[in-house]
Image (cartoon, helix red, strand yellow):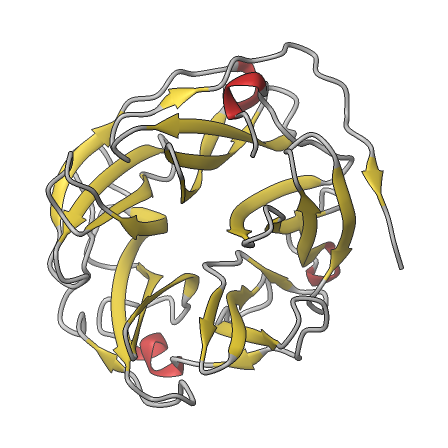
Length: 310
């Protein structure tokens, strides 16, 4: 069992810029960390982007770091087990148009080529940019929910990212019902006039009094975390900004939260950017999923070694 209180932030940094983390914990205690690998500092070249995957049992030693997608993809979401298959959603990036896709696996080692889905979301009336990004999957019985982000170019003062929702009862993930056709699920807010992105959804608890909790990146220029709660995954009550301690590894910008449940509470992994434009990952813990405490920070923490296997 990982003693998260003994770890220090940032928990992982490499020579690449690490973005958009998602974590899956196996029954044997092995953690799978999926993320966007951004290399070579040229944002607009597809060959500099890929879905990375690494394993760890303690968030100190990381093994078998490798790409599991072709180049030109980013922003992995929740890994789910659906109809006897592992499914990992992500997006094409940065080539236009950016679209949602997923890969499947039987063993969490070999992954299929990207399969595109929910293309109809590109034509929503509040998606003038005709792009769909940041997929989040939530399985609820035989129904699969998908939260996604699209961009409004005309109804706000600036380029504004908005969160939409769809669900499917189709085992093949081809037929979707979009519940946010006329308006987005999450729009612009007073302290976030340019919208929201990077949604994390996880089960609630008695302390919160709701079945589901959502934490997302609110705002683009002045990004911070915000939350919402729901009992049905479709109707959400906004609970406002979530205050967290600011540390050096995420002093310039932070976001892209991902949350999972441990036996003694919740853990959040967060992307942070420091003043040298490096993006790394750090961890927070919570008893209720709403109030969060940052792990202690180790200043000038050395880059951690990665054990590579073919």
